[in-house]
Image 1 (cartoon, helix red, strand yellow):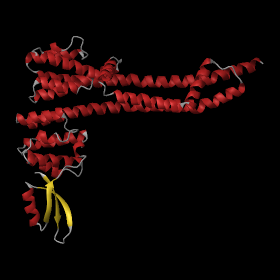
Image 2 (tube, one colour; image 1 turned 60 degrees about the vertical axis):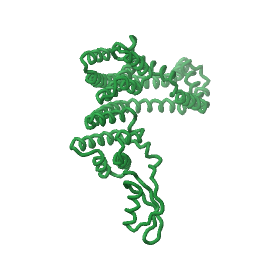
Image 3 (cartoon, helix red, strand yellow; image 1 turned 30 degrees about the vertical axis):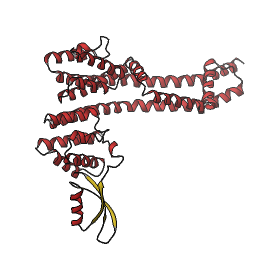
Image 4 (cartoon, helix red, strand yellow; image 1 turned 90 degrees about the horizontal axis):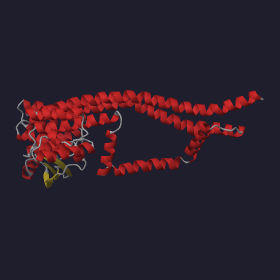
Length: 400
């Protein structure tokens, strides 16, 4: 039911505000009078300013989809199910979101339209799946597919984050150690070498010069780093910059294959959801292309979509020099030939996700020893630059 805000006078003559649901303003006025409250003004209440941007965690959102699916499969109507879930939810974002959707659905709006209010939680492709489920009377199936898809994507993200913790810690420690040596240790040795008036080797002179640059010009270096970061942030919305960046990223050894498989899995997952929900293929390709996360692959899917629009099969409409994995075309061709495109996309999603995890494990297995070798080399070079002048000094003393 709609939400109204009313200014009322209580039995003791005190004026205060109430916010309640009612069928309409007249029904709310009668309900207030029955409670010995005199309404002065009643108006439709606006949701809080930040409500539209509410976004639940992946775990809470997946649990919510499963709970709603179970209610609907049990024969409970959507408005009753949403009302029960809102009443049972703990205080917080989940209850506010469910309460708003329940009010809209109880007032007669379709579920997907009520969900679109929360633009961050229900982007276009998710709302489209819900809309298709409503139109085909298969909403529980659509919610189950959405929950499965989101759970798989969340698991892949968690795997990547867990795997990156150790390299990130080692890289941070390495950077801190190098800055400490250059900023704190090297200047002291440089002062000692200056008092001894030694003829320093090239390696030591380079290290001292780097230390002096860091010590005296750190504001300039920090400003340059911030400027580069700001420029990259400013250009991130440029289509040409994104295309160039993503194309170069795909050419990166080892890591490029991880990005390729992740983008392929994302496209297949979103396109599969939409195709299985009954969305036309051209619309599913457009949504899937926009959600790949890679500008180069997205452009190639859009080009293939133009070919599909004139009657070509998807696997044949892709550019000859496409950047998708080798198994992508074979799976698409098999699915289109047998009329099982949804099953083919599911296979691509599963296989690409597994490949992404394997390639990520390989990349991290190579990254860890690389970081350790780099740390060893840097510390070794710094130590060698210290010892070379000392060896020269000891050699001169022994000669005398």
